[in-house]
Amino acid sequence: MAGGAGGMNANRHRERLGKAWYKFSGSPLSVGGLVIVAVVVALAVLAPLVAPYPKHAGAFVDFANSSQPPGGAHLLGTDNVGRDILSRIFFSLRSALLMGIVVLSIAVPVGSSLGLVAGYFRGTLVDAIITRITDVFLAVPPLVLALAIASLLAPTLTNAMLAISVMWWPWYTRLVYGMASSLSKEYFVRSAELTGGTWMHITVRELLPNCVSPILTKMTLDMGIVIMVGASLGFVGLGEQAPAPALGNMVSDGAKYMPELWWMTVFPALAIMIIVLGFNLLGDGVRDMFAVEDKG
Amino acid sequence: MSSWTFILRRMAWSVFALFGLSLVIFILSRVIPGDPARMALGPSAPEAAVTELRRQMRLDQPLPAQYAGWLWAALHGDLGLSLVTMRPVLTDIQDFLPATMELVALAALIELAVGISLGVLSAMYSRRWVDNAIRLLAYLGIVNPAFVFAVMFMLVFVYLWPIFPAVGRVTVDGSLVRTTGLATVDALLRGDLVTFWDALRHLVLPATALAMNGTAQLARITRSSMVDNLGRDYVAMATAQGLDRRTIMFKYLLRPSVIPSVSLMGLQFAALFGNAFLVELIFNWPGLSRYGVTAMLHKDLNAMTAVVLTVGLVFVLANIVTDIVVALLDPRIRLGAGAET
Image 1 (tube, one colour):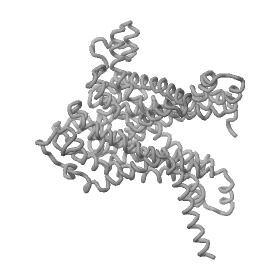
Image 2 (cartoon, chains in turn purple, blue):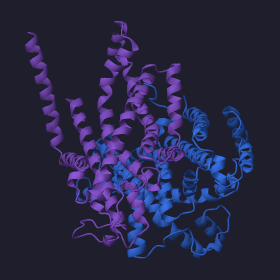
Image 3 (cartoon, chains in turn red, blue):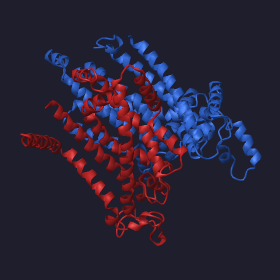
Image 4 (cartoon, chains in turn brown, red):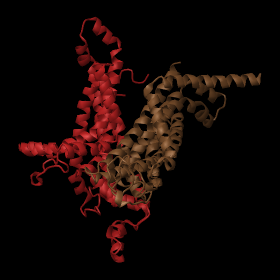
């Protein structure tokens, strides 16, 4: 009997995954997004193997080959000190993706937990404290806050990630707060309370599973936006420092040499665009996928 | 609860939020490693001068006393001295804020006008090629950060096809007589059309780069909201009564459909201010954002705090205005009907 029940559960999971994939793959745009993201991740992971000039990603100068237009030995050209743009873009994907993963790993758990607690204890002091703090952080445009915090710290990748995480968590708190507070009025929460469930059990085991889909959707969309904010910080000079390759820094370095060495700016900018596009399409697909499940 | 009480409560909480923000920024700026006074005077300044500056900046007092001192001065209009420009921060802000406001205002106008028009067009020709073309453009508008657009615009419109000037606000600087500080409005007020046109030409490129993101978002939201509303009962009724599609769209659908867009403008304002930071750098626009970034890079604490607070204040005001406009547009909110179900 136990074996049979276990088998049925596994089949149910497989069936739901199958249905989800069927819906997801029905939209070419979503699949396109998945492909783009997969390619970006693969390039980032395999950069040392795939990049034609892996040494150019560090401190490297080759003035003989500097300022080469795209084509020939250097597909996307070289910059003003002779580094291959294509290789540098591949390596810059690493810090970009790392930034997205780290920021979301911090912001999502922190923000969602606060939102769950505030939503469940809606109307109490706990709620008031959490929402007021959230409002303070949301009172300023996100980029401005990230710039301010990043500028107070030494310009490194870690500090940039820290700055963005600090201003990112409130968005999740707000998202989860709305859902948690309306779900808290449902009967299943009441019955859990009546049968003796602690607030920890209720928030984690009852409320959270029902909030997962919007959180996941937002996370996917946010990956692209975090990378964009990271590029903006790098553009101003508040993230990774030279000679490490970073997309925002490459755009700002290249801007000095416009319009003669246009490829120095255009290609990193295109890279940013493609990455954000990929995550956007993927996020839309994820949202559509969850939407169908709810109706079904 | 009437909508006005709601808005007043929002305002009160916003003021509270601004105080909280000032506290956060203040604490952050005072706990950083490094000595701001030393950084301001440079490594070769005599120790006595550094100590004196530290005393002036109240850096030798406990943190709460420092905050109290700063708050008291701020409420009296003294936001301290900028260590970069060596002028009172308030003067700096008065100089630079109008430039940014001009930029953000034109960008917001572009977003509203072009975004909503494109959204309406897209909904009107839903699923035809016009719709698909606009949706594609909107997608491209969303995925590119504003500074990418700024750089591209510079490349194309300044260098390749030189129709727009590259940097600055006006070509001939002498004619920037201050009335409001907004170059375009001042020129108009004086009847000086040449300067007005010149200022406008300088303004167009950065404002458009700034507006691309929001235009795309507004277009998408207007389109989806219009398409949703097209399925409503009252539209079916109007069609059955013989009204043509155009009248239905413009007379009945426009107002309810633009409400989500106008609500979005509040958040958009924040995004505009944030992105202005980068666009101003690229176009060398003498605005608050460029001043702020310089302050941040030089760890000019007074200027930085003031800029963040100013931006926060403008953002809060913009949100309140948005709420009022939405309340005016949507009779349901005004009359409080179906509020707390």
